[in-house]
Length: 337
Image 1: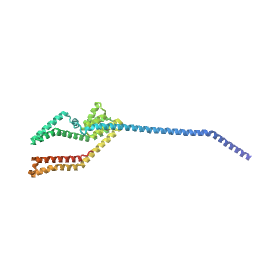
Image 2 (image 1 turned 120 degrees about the vertical axis):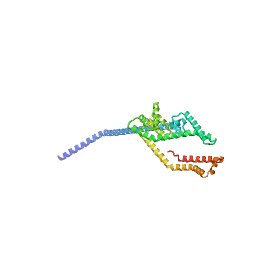
Image 3 (image 1 turned 90 degrees about the vertical axis):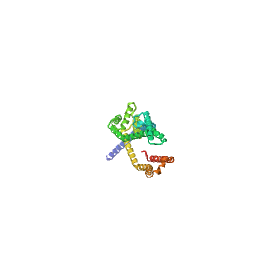
Image 4 (image 1 turned 90 degrees about the horizontal axis):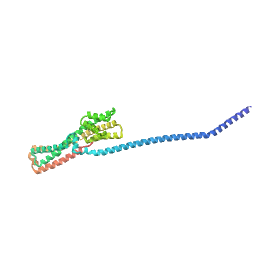
């Protein structure tokens, strides 16, 4: 009986194994196909994700290249315009110099005043007892030298006043833009409340906009009436921002910081060159001081320089060489920042 149960159990186990083997054999192909389909689906998903990542990266690269090309084109255009406007800062015509000096004067009136200045200076030199040969030189100096020197002095002083106030105006624009005001309103604020000559220059920008010019073009024209690189920097920043976009407040804040650093550097260079300037002044004044002291102690010894033709020639050559030396020293001490 016990042997029969073992045989039955063995038969049942064998039948179960056989049934399992038959079932596995029948479902093996299905399971294998499902695994292959799963792996294929996984590879398809992975390939799709890779394609999406590649497409996103390609789009980003194309957008960056497009933006870079736009900025390069803008910079090239600005460089061409800046080259065309460089003549307003180096050797502008006299009419432009009068505008840059802030003088509301026509070119005809300037020439008339120059002629009057030449006649007055010649008359003064004649009254002082100068020889007749000196009168034409005085006329030339009065007509072509003195008026232009006065205009250049006023022009330089106006540029200096502009550079002293311009960073403050940029800071006001930055704060206005950060608070949500449009750039036009910020410029109008400067045109109404800033100190001269910044107020006049920004008022010209507003007037140019009223005539139909865009803000970028109006700011680029500032160098025509304010001959300094800082005004050109401001126009370039506005031009790039209008064409390529970007954070205007950050760009203007960086420009304001750069202008203040340039001002500090100029002051530092001026302080470091004061010793050389003092030495140049002493060396330039030494011959005149010595000649005056010799005249006080021994007038007969030095008067032949003024009363004889040979002495006049010596004085002329000496004055020429002294002028050349002073000019060379001035150029050596003139450091551009």
